[in-house]
Image 1 (cartoon, one colour):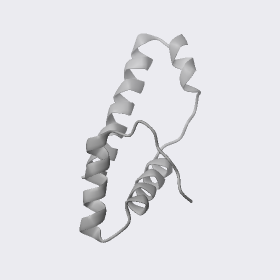
Image 2 (image 1 turned 120 degrees about the vertical axis):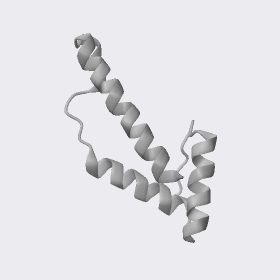
Image 3 (image 1 turned 90 degrees about the vertical axis):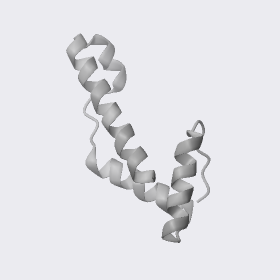
Length: 78
């Protein structure tokens, strides 16, 4: 299925495209694999909007987790 992903960082896309070329796979397959791996490792326990009602420490923890996800996705695509 063809999908459009808006606001994808250009350098991340280039890295995914380069990785796909090195592996001889389509970009869509590399991105699908990365998303599946990410979704398999994470769970959603509360809607994100509830972070506004949380203490500062909980918000900082959520920010740290998001930074880790960004790092994993970026490293996977390089």
